[in-house]
Length: 222
Image 1 (cartoon, rainbow, N blue to C red):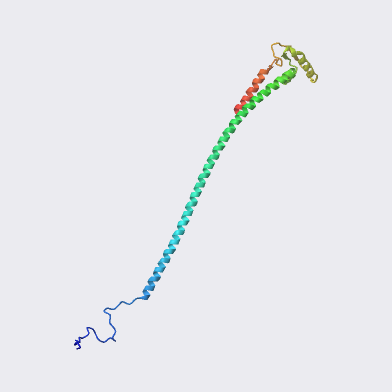
Image 2 (image 1 turned 90 degrees about the horizontal axis):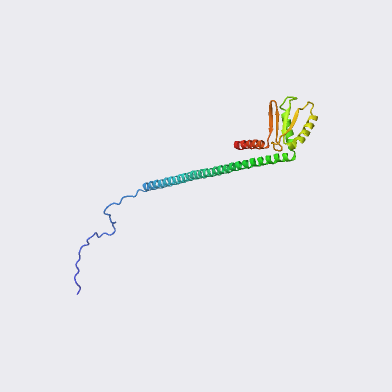
């Protein structure tokens, strides 16, 4: 036996061809506004990128100039240090040269004095009377014509001095009044010439002292 079926009404509309209606309306999308906003954002990004590149370029330029200034400063400092070192070297060299110059001047003075002594001794050894004859010539330039001159020499040189006086007289037109006297107190080569208004002394030691004084004066001035 078939059970009985209870028929109940549908809990919803039975017309399925009708569209369903939403409970609330969704807002419409504004495409134009979105496009404008995107364009604005792209322009802002481009501006920020341009500013970033400009700032980076400025920073690089400033860093370059700072590095260049530092390099110049370091170069100037190095140059100043080199100049100071060179100046110190020049001053040291000048001081060394001055010391060498003083030493050479002293050695030259001693050498000149030694040479003068050697030459004087050689002149006395070779021709002591000739040295006296030269002194007679200088005396004749100081006295008036005809004034007598008394000449005192070592006894060993009397004859030789008289011979030289005779030769001088032969070449002179005026009459020479030259009197030679022997003096054992005089060293060989020395002489004493006297006349009324003055005199002349030929002294080897005095000549050496005069030469030394002259050399000392030159060395002191140097």
